[in-house]
Length: 399
Image (cartoon, rainbow, N blue to C red; front, side, top):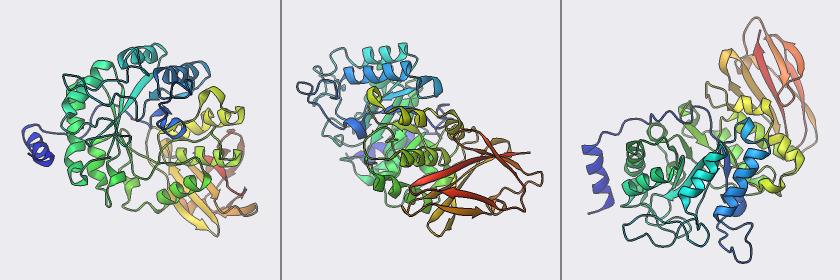
């Protein structure tokens, strides 16, 4: 019997409602290993950086002790290459015994004792992208295994899977996760493998979902993601909201390639776009300037706005882009960005055109510092200076 026939049968006998696990009401925050540490399994020659319980314990320590947990970063997320190449005699996934000698349950306990949550990686297909066992034909067992281990989040990738099965299979994993009785945040890679994603259907089954290629540690990769979200093809921004968010991938702030200003740019754009804030860096050696960006409470507050509305690109002014995000209490966040690398320039913004029309006006504060800039009235123009590969970022509070 083909997987599609099995999934259809499951859907017929078990009603799969829209995702209602009470999780991800604001974009989740935490740390994810993939971009920085990839599938490094060489613990003999690189014990401090290989995919192992030691690595995840170290990152949990840093989240708890270096201020990240206190500003909202709570998930420690395992990615690919954590498991053995074979399931056990009962068909269950098993952590690699050399790299995870204590097992995933013990790792989850360690992370929970730090006041944090543990996420894990799986794949909808027969294998993960790294060639480890996938969940095809094992979804119910894997969901229960993750719950038994105390897992708090599942990222389900889509390698080695039939794309035609995804509209059925991803909701089925949602069903099985819910049936465990354990709250498990559900991160889907479903739209990233689909030419024309059905975003309303995806939002019914997933808390967050990847819809673009993996971010790389480069400014060009960052700029390509921003452009994808600026185009907003399929109007995917409209389905975002509490419990369901588009995921443009990891924060690479504190890694190697981004300048200080480019790091500011990514942090602001992920806040404007209501994106999950999953760092992928080495928390043991994050430069202080990068740490200050990652822990900026004013920017995080914009990201975590309870309305959960995803901001949009609303205008282009020569080489500059204008992005606006509606916030709770009729407030707004807005940003002018310069991706061209050209010289600094002043940009005049008719904010009323972008929705800031309250006759009482708005208090404009600088987005990073919270410092007062000006009281703005709808008939006025707002002018700001934008540096190359940087962002001018503001909050507008209704008066």
